[in-house]
Length: 606
Ligand code: AGP
Image (cartoon, rainbow, N blue to C red; front, side):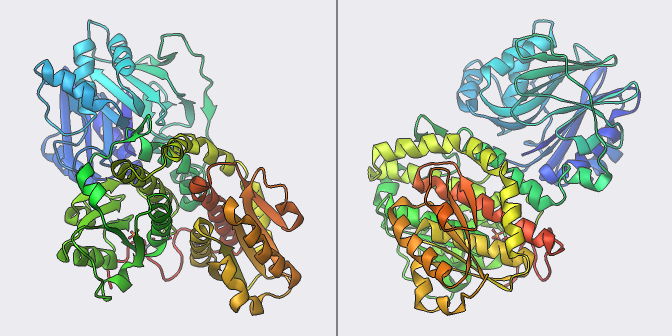
């Protein structure tokens, strides 16, 4: 996730672009840059936060009232000055900024290299500048159209050329893009809040549309050139709502970003059932030889690891252990050289996870990091890296990063399984297909938020609460319970459904809420027995179940439905109603949802 900007108008472009980038910084902040057109194309870019770009502009100012800008969250290539956007073609006459991923960039880059092109960065984005320049025959719009036809993926781009001063051309292919219409000036941005203080009138660009901005305003067309009569919407959010994209809290915004996060994390990595993991360097021989997988992490990342453990064990028949990092580091574990350690951390800076990962490396294990932050300490220790592409997560309670960790582990399991020949090909095909369908399934779950809110009313006044499930459902129960605890301050415990009768049942009395997750068809009847034990003691049941589950309504007070899917993938969808439940309970209890008491986003101490 990156942020992009554009400006055409009477004012000096640089301060407007930089200001917009600052407001988009939540989308990425490992480098930033602008390009301003003023007879020639002047590019200024710098690694690090926007402040670095501002310092550069102080010493090397630009002049001109047309420009484009970018704040980056690295996906291809480390956070360096060279990889920062904007990118130009070698002549410096064509310049682009880009948000998203060009899935076929390797083959496009190879074609360009074969034609003698030289690249200044490691990014997929730079090829767009080369392609626009190559395709240009006097018409920037036509060149951009041809470039888009060649470039597969989900992205948005903005292009500008010295040859047609006064014009910028932008395209949306899934990644967001809006046009702000000011008084004699026009803005482009990844989201509305970036330019809301300049104008309240917006056109929201849709997929496969192209917008041409000149000093006469903005014209929208389909990518094929058909005119589009786009309605102008007037936005009346206040400044705080705007920062949160109109949501009341960052947590809710991030929950709703999850379909897009799944799309981004899968992009260019899963094609026709084959997995490509760009920073995972081990070969098939190594994968076939892995004797055991260790997964280590803390908190929500540990809960993601619980899912990974189940997948490796059940589907790959590969011994796997997930261990809390703060336990593993002092457990003197027997980790051997043919064992793969997977360290999972959103921030890549959690002290315990770093220490456990180091320990595994010292014991001769190969270490693979699953992390959301390019260049984080964990990524620097790692032999292999699988970046989640969730974008910056602001809310302390992790939601979208967890989602991306799950997707990353499915990809990894498919990759290792293919090398070992231990995954049933029919199941692998179903999982691949199911992953591609997942963004749509998550949209469906999110559209049912009102049910989670209804369930929250059953819970708000409770003092204790329990989450139960079996197998993968138990792993989801753990995450649902943690989410509730950290933001609602309601005491909660998660346990395997079969464990309830071994002690905790003594605490189930009238109206005690119990959340049961029922997505694993092979143990459904067993879990229903636990539901009946709860009902017999007067407890309230909130169930998470498939649409097709006709039985559960007879047992539950509220059913939070998810679309039918492969049981193996169900955790991805089943966690969403639990995130929403936690959110709404915390809201009803009036808590500071994004910054819960006593907690920090990154725990960098032991
Ligand atoms: C989750 O909502 C928490 N904020 C917390 O458990 C978090 O997942 C944990 O501290 C690990 O953080 P990391 O992923 O950055 O390593």
